[in-house]
Image (cartoon, rainbow, N blue to C red; front, side, top):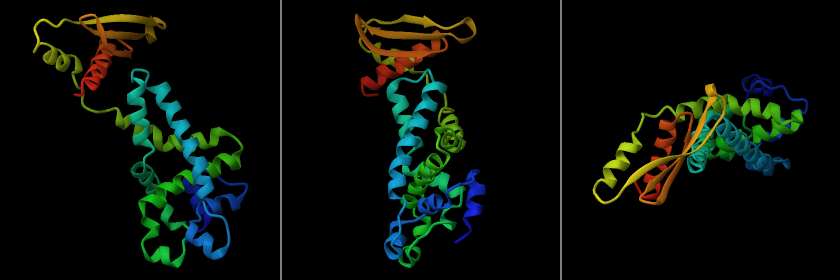
Length: 226
């Protein structure tokens, strides 16, 4: 097990209360053997802090995304697979306090444990610093690049796809209606509804009318099961 000072360097935060950091790295198997606290309560708190910071980041940096997509993106960013990857980059397994049985069964590389410790570390930083700012700095170091990468997917022309589906019924009429426009010229935000005949089947927002229309078409396709 490597010294805690090395972990502090990797997470880029120096603890005032070293016991707090120790607890954040203590698995229940070790805690049961040595009659000390495990990271489970910290994990509970860290989960909430992580979820809030991630939601706030997505809300401010991706104004074009509808609520449903924001929810999906947040879930993907804070899922076990993602947190496991973050912890692997911090070499968390080398600092864990595990029972001999847990070590022998591969606990130091178990995705569920490493994901939990990312959350407990987050909570420990939050409590030790006494503010959200240090926890936020730690979280965004991982969430920011992952979120940006998440939104670099190949462009999909949702409008064309929706049009092709609707054209299968020639009597149906598709129309995009701008329902809102706000912000200065250099930072406009548009909201758009897509109507099928007189019914609203999708809503979207974006920095241009075209982007807002794409998001409205996307929502319509999702509601139609595509």
